[in-house]
Each structure stands twice: as structure tokens, then as C-alpha cells.
Length: 495
Image (cartoon, rainbow, N blue to C red):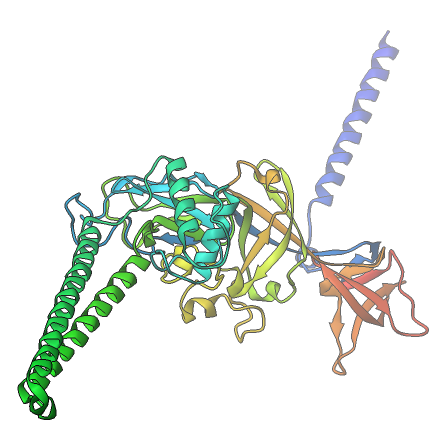
């Protein structure tokens, strides 16, 4: 029993000794001399930073943010008054122009549709390249009249020909068209009717004057003849000065009366040639292409429709974007574009215009374009154009405008005024190629590109030909006859 107890005591003593020794060893490992501490804080020996060479396909893209808009925006205004002239007539014609039915933004306008109403009269849309610039009245000729005749024929109101002359057939077609739309075509005003009556009265007066003068001349001539016959031989041999003078006076009166009648007839004929049904300058707007969409409206009921009354666009959607000039230098019209919406819908497009050509037209304008003309050049001042010059200007970093067409607008249905991501593919490698980070390529003093490869602890320079660059990577091809570069090689990108 005592022997067992002694063994336990010995075992305990040995355990204590082991623990004390282990503690001392541990404490010794945690104690460092000043030299050891300094050595522990010394930076490791510098070495190159390397990245592995990869073999892959490269696709270079230009990425930008754009906005979805309706295409071909153009300012809209009226070419003149709606209805008759400025002098108020008995029926109230010529009173101040007021919008009685305002245009509605978002409306799709087709040929023959009523855009709006002014003083109860319509403003109608027709297709044609020549802008409305004057009232079209009987007897007028020109391309605008021919354009009107063609439009009337398309709408089913045959003017009898497309000669470019506003005749009776055109007047009848205009009248029927207005009636079909629920309006009355513009007829002569009360002032014009009064003027016609005055001209007709002038003709009647001139005719009466000529008849009277003719009768007086005939009577005078008969009297002279009778006197010479009763005066005997001596009388016929001696002229009568008084009778000769009277005959000359009557002849002058007769010629004057004839001249007055001719002038009165000419004035009446000139007036009648333009008298009848007409199309006032403000009652038709010609658009180079229909249908169009009323995008913005700047007038409301009761306003005077002067200046710009709104903006029209095509029904097609486009994307407007801006890219740095350095990126724009890589772009060309016709390049394929992928458009991605905020909810990840995709649409296919193409670069339609770059620089000044892609800028939207100015908000205001005069002449053909502001009335729906065919000219595409309406936008901005010279300084505006310079800010959106195509690539190649002195400031290559200046932002450049892009317009991207969307062949199938249904792909972006409901996305108008929304933001989208624009990705333009500007190049692709020919299959899989060797690629390295752009930082791995260095250019020697002789202009040759090279990469530095680390193999078995040694660094070797290999001359390469640089190809397509994309996403921070660049295609490289070794140009040294004896040097090789393969996937997995470690190229130096830094120290």
C-alpha cells in the first residue's frame, strides 16, 4: 500500500517537471533579441508581379448610357392665317386668331387628319416635301399646288389632274374634302364679294358709256351728211370747220369709251381668275412623311397660334447617347448596337449618325422646316454644331453625340424617355488569340513592343506585335523567330 503511494508521488513529480520544461520552452520561443526583432520587420526582397498568358477570344466594345426618344423631332408652326384675311368682314372674318381646339400631345397624325382648329376652322395634315408658304387660290400654279392635287387624289377626292394649276377641278376636290371632314371650304369673303360687284358694275357703266358715245357719234355724223347734201354745190366744195372739229371730238370720246370698257373687262377678268374656293396658308401643314406623332404641344385653347405651336416626331424610336471623343473615333455609321433596358430587355440597333448629324434640331426655326418641310438641316448655331463635331476635331476628348436607330421599335415599346445601356461592337479577334494585360506591354526606344516573361526564375524579353485591345487585355503575337509565347507563361506587369 505504501509502495503504491510512493509510485503515485513519483509520477506526479515527473509530470510537474515536464510541465515546467514545456513552459520554459514556450517562453523561450516568445523572447526575441533586438536583432531578431529588426530582422522580422525588414521588407522581403522585391520581386516581379506576374500574370499568366491566356488564349481567348476578344471583343472590343464602346459602352455608353443613352435615352430612348422618338425619332426625327421637328418644330411645328403655321405658315399663315387660318381663314380669310386681316380685315374684318360682315361675318366676322379676319378677327384675331384663337385656338378653338388645341392639338393633343401623343396623338398619331395621318394624312388628312385635323391637327387642331383655329377660329372654328381646321388645320389639316398632308404629305409633301414642299412646305406650305402661301394661300392656294384659283389660277395659282406651282409645285405646292401639284402637291395638293396629289394629296387630294390619295385621299379619294380627284382634282381632275395633277397639272400644278389650281382650277375648277381642284376647287371642287377641296370643297368635297372639307365637307367630308365636317367643315366648309374657304369661300370668297364679304369684302371680295363686294369688290366683285364693284368690278361688274364698272364694266356695266363702261358699256353704257360706250353705247351712249356711239349713238351720239352716229347722230353727229348723220347731221353733217345732211347739211352737205342740202347746201348745194358751193356748200359741198367748201368744208365746214365746225363739223370737222365735232367729228374729231366724238371720235376721241368713242375711243376713250372703248378703252374704259376694255380696262374694266380686264380688271374683272383678273379678279375672277382668283375668285372662288381657296386654301388659306394656315389651314394645311405639309409633312415630308406621314404618319407623325405630336410629341410636344406649346399652345392651348384660347391661345394665339403664332410662332412654334409644338413638336412632331416620327413614330419610330431612336436612342440618343454621348461618348468621349476618343471612343467616337472608333465608331462608324452602320455599326451594330445592342441596347439593354433597365429591366434587361434587349433591342438591336445600329449607329445612324455621329457628331453634329446626330444632334436633335433646334427648338425654334423659320421657313420650310418649321412648317413640316423636308430639310433635315434645322439645328442649332455654329457653336452648337462645333460641340458635337464628328471625330477628328482638335479636342479628341470632347463628348460626341450619337443617334442609334432601332429597326424594330416594338423591342423598346413603352421605354420612351427611359435610360438604356448602349454596347457597340467595334472589333473582334479572329478566333482565340494570346492575350496579356495591357500593363504587360512595354515599348522600346525603337518603337517595338515587347513583354517580359519569367521562366525558371529568369526574365526574358520577347518582342510582340500588338493586336486588338479590349477590357484591359490586348492581343499579342511573338515576332522573334526563336522566342515563343504560350498560354500559362507568366508575364511581368509590375515590380
